[in-house]
Length: 210
Image (tube, rainbow, N blue to C red; front, side):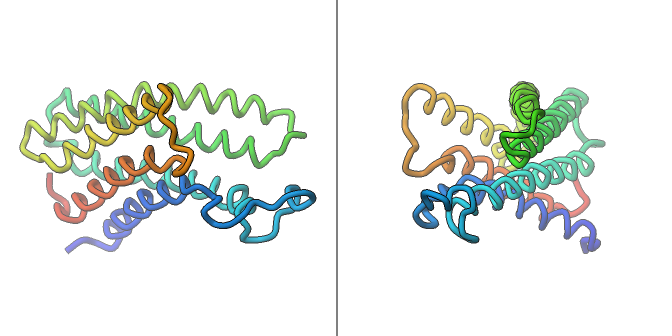
């Protein structure tokens, strides 16, 4: 039986994947955006209010919960990993942690408003840390997943290695001119959410084992 603390971690990991999707759902799906004076004081629960008040908090929650799930996975399996896989797992976790910090900086800059003199610095720092986190997390997760693939854990390995690769491919396609205007960031978020869901399922299925 899972102790209650482990059940909580599994639940939080699954919620992290869900938050990733929620944070990227186009807010226009929730209704028309207010105009005129309502832009500065949007009605509660309107699309613009959700974009300003809910989405940033959900994005930070998603980053923190995904990091929690990866830490739990690393803690469970680290003793039975090959040395190279363990080091790449550390790189991946550090990269995701840096990306989480970047998300928090960008969100705090947005909440400070244009009058906050530190907002621009926070955005620049967030973008820089986000790029650093991506450079660490992408190869780290791919190699971490490759280690599971080699040991026969194909589902978990495919999630860790394939999720970032698919997400990167979508980003490259978007930069190359493929438009996702109708669906916002969902094509980027869905591979991440699916991978996080697989991690959560594996944590549940292999309770306390590697």
